[in-house]
Image 1 (cartoon, helix red, strand yellow):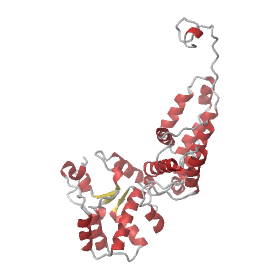
Image 2 (cartoon, helix red, strand yellow):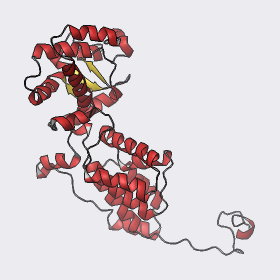
Image 3 (cartoon, rainbow, N blue to C red):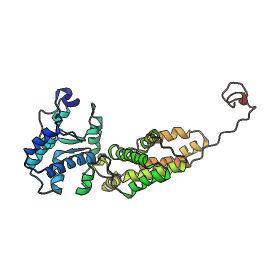
Image 4 (cartoon, one colour):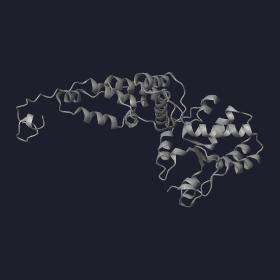
Length: 330
């Protein structure tokens, strides 16, 4: 069972304190203000990049990048106060997340958790923990890691630049709206591992349309390259391409799959409806989005039969018994 709000299921969560109260508590720790500011940046960045990270791992990362910054006791004292900050993370232990959790935990076993992962069910939190299993942490250099303090930060890779350019030049979206759409795509990809189906749906909700099928196909290719080279919470900071290279060959997903001759013939003969098959591909559980894009492109290349033209004086195919011109053809 999980907790709700600050006193969820009878277990109290850390109360949010005022800035004045927090400053008084920080002054009791023998660290300077720049160190406090740096640590707050690290906590937000780590929560944004990894989604969930144990405090023990957070300390290791911070101290490896700043060897003389603080002692372990000073870090623990800071983290105790930071639990009462109003930030984009929670700092919680199993004793606070679950009714039947332990009575207390080692402070280093508490977790920095992206605030977006916490709700009544904890479903997203549990799913992210499942995705993290057996994956190593990717630890960027200090300047890059701290840039992730911004929840919408994305490293300026060639793929990110191409996607930004596509929105403004190919889709001709004005700068302010393009920036807003790009933030949606970054957050959805980095924090939600958004696939092409959910991306297309979200773009439609934001009023983005593709005037030509070729433009939609090009967007899917550009987005997939962006997706495969973006650091994700689900991958503990790795990009999908980096994680793929870490896997032994026998564990890697297939590089391509095909619709097969029978399905292609069914589409070409009109036995299988193109729209139905497209929806199945969009909703299918596939090992990678690259495979989905490949199937959609293969489907787009198949030419279904053209419907026979109905003469105006022929009987209407709806079965009304009337002539087509006086029924559905009016």
